[in-house]
Length: 176
Figure: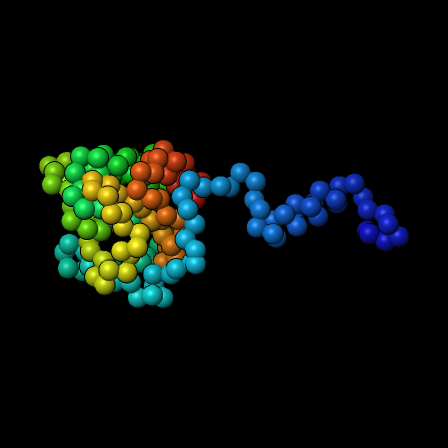
């Protein structure tokens, strides 16, 4: 079509959109979490997580499901537990798609976790080799989160103090 300087008017916007997309710009796709750069794949890294029952955590699942990993700072208490509760509630708001998100808590559970039914929503485990230490907050009574693709690729980091409603919006975008 672009012969002798002639370009149909409908083609120009498509070319511009293609160039913007190719350069990495996407309108309205900014998430609330920070992208993990350089990209990490927990399967390739052989990142070992041992669940509370002693079993290893499988980053690759039998079906396509994302994992939301909660990493608590020292002395996870009321504020930390409230954030964990908001994260579990974000999963519930996915309605019929909530089974497409697994919740994994790594670290010492909050003191009131048993009373508050944390095990009803979260799988509890530990980062065996400490490979996620750089993502764990150092502030007491805080929690950060990682969103991990079903193939083990870490997608986003939500640093301590993140807005759980922003996380909920991100989950609703990626889990459909």
